[in-house]
Amino acid sequence: MQGESTHAGKPCVFVRLTGCNLRCAWCDSTYTFTAGAWHDLDGVVAQAHGYGVHTIEITGGEPLLQPAAIPLMQRLLDLGHEVLLETSGSKPIAPVPDDIHVILDLKAPDSGEAEANLWENLPHLDPGDEIKLVLASRADYDWARDVIREHRLDAICPVLLSPAWGLLDPKDLVEWMLEDQVPARLSLQIHKVVWDPKKTGV
Image (cartoon, rainbow, N blue to C red; front, side, top):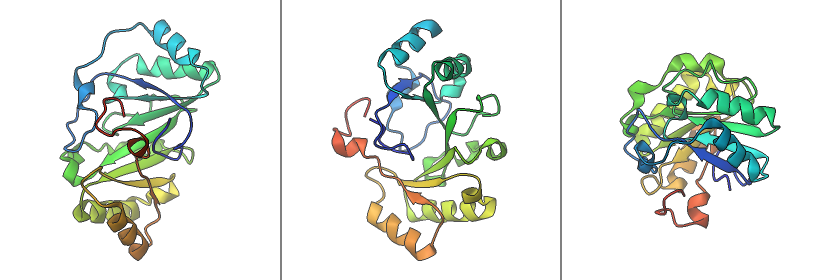
């Protein structure tokens, strides 16, 4: 079940690719740095398609580190799937097929990886994509609010603000958003409410 993004609540197949070039302080999937096994492209396509679920998300780690990620996405599109790509935004998204729904994470300062944001990616987003910012503090929120205004992110696509699990009280974030009338949506990780948030893969 998709637990976040504008697609939250949908049945979804997740194809999680190993490897990440970032080390965000609040990362909840550190096992993706090295865990996993090699699979050929045909096998991955067959397995993901075989579940009979319309929506498939390619995620990681950072999926765009894998050269086969682009042909994987195209193959799944050709089979009629709705395909989501969750990317850190630290790698170019220009090669991503046009019909992919890009979920671009912008890294706030408390992540420790704000310098990795590749701002040149913004012009490659369209209204069907979305931008997500995970926030761990008031300072992160202030940064995100200013970035949204400076880059007019809400004019590009939906913008989602997500409190880092266990680090920022969602009620505080809601109050700040309402006070500032920030043009963004609140995004909570509902999969961590449904399942044990400490379980691998949740």
